[in-house]
Image (cartoon, rainbow, N blue to C red; front, side, top):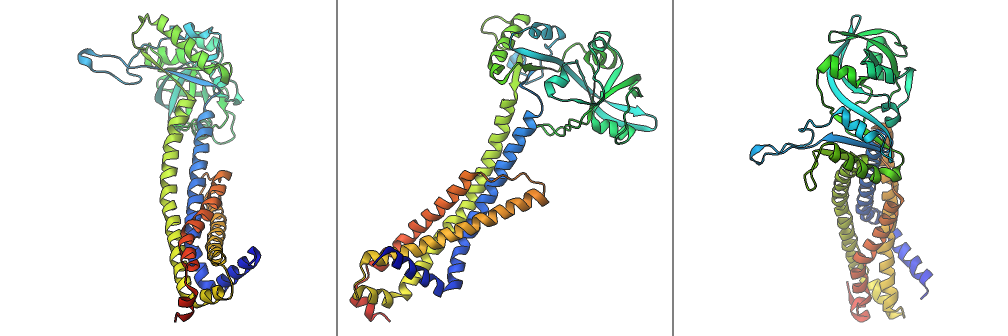
Amino acid sequence: MSILMTIRIALKALARNKLRTGLTMLGMIIGVAAVIAMVALGTGARAMIEDQIRAAGTNLITIYAGSFNAPGGVRGGIGTSVRLRPEDVDAIRDLPAVQYIAESVDTRAQMIYGNQNWNTRIEGTNVDLPAIRSWPVKYGSFFSEEDVRAATKVVVLGSNVADTLFGENVDPTDMQVRLRNHVFRVVGVMTSKGSSGGGMNMDDQVFIPYTTLMKKLTGQQYLSRIYVSAISADHMQPAIQQITEALRAAHNLAPGEEDDFIIQTLDDIVAVRTQATTTMTNLLAGIAGVSLVVGGIGIMNIMLVSVTERTREIGLRLAIGARSFDVLLQFLIEAIVISIVGGGLGIGIGFLVSEFLRIYQGMAATIPLNAVLVAVMFSAAVGIFFGFYPARKAANLDPIVALKYE
């Protein structure tokens, strides 16, 4: 018997019991749709995290004050050392792999304009920050190097702060605002940047010269962090090596002595966040995958029932000359068709669910091509695996016994 004839017989057998065939497919449909939707959400979330973090800056390297060793073996964590000084910036500034560098020290304060006020983050920095962050100015300009040297009372507003104090689409350049007991002149407003990879609203902050913050607002002598931009992505590792050597020399650290600073890149943050997202995606996809196995077992159960119901038919086919291989192939094709059609419908439903969540719920959802290919291959594999035993049972029936079956 030809393969085409066997396929036609298998399809007619499935068509005779449309409801049962549809219900058998349902397990595969739900399983594949769930896997596709979970993988799409996980992939989209991972891509969104990477984009958010990388939007924080260009080839960004962040240097934090590191841990310190206290008496009795007690160790502090990141930022517990206060050994980052403005002089450290001078030691790094002219390194071959470094393009931009900016001091950073921050605090919070109530900003007041007329009868409006807003509590916001204040970051003290220098003129290189917009270049490091790839962050253009919307109104006015960023403060100048002269403002940094003279510790001038000037401020650049984040877009949320500007909208809150002055109203939307208003240029507040040259307006005066009050921070604590000091009057500052607004010199510019940054464009909207959104949230950072850490979840902080980048637009809900203002920038002033770090010298102004240290001398006139807080009185502190040490920096919170230092931002560095390498000249290119290929120079990230050389920049880290050069920075490490320069800071160890500046801090008079002996060979073998632990660094009192910590250098972190965006790739470090991306790796941590995406690893957590990948783990959760795999967990959810694994749970959804259980339904695929359940669907496969359902296919095997229905095929076994079908073999029992069609015992006389099988015996008749064998008696008039059909080979055992033809019978085995027919039932195997039935199982594979159920799996593949169910898998295809599941992929379509998974895609629709992902699009619904993306459009109407605002969730990031991206369906990778490899997930679709894996779903199709897995559906076929389920059909072959769970359909083989019923097909083999049908093929091994004795024609005489099968014809007597009631």
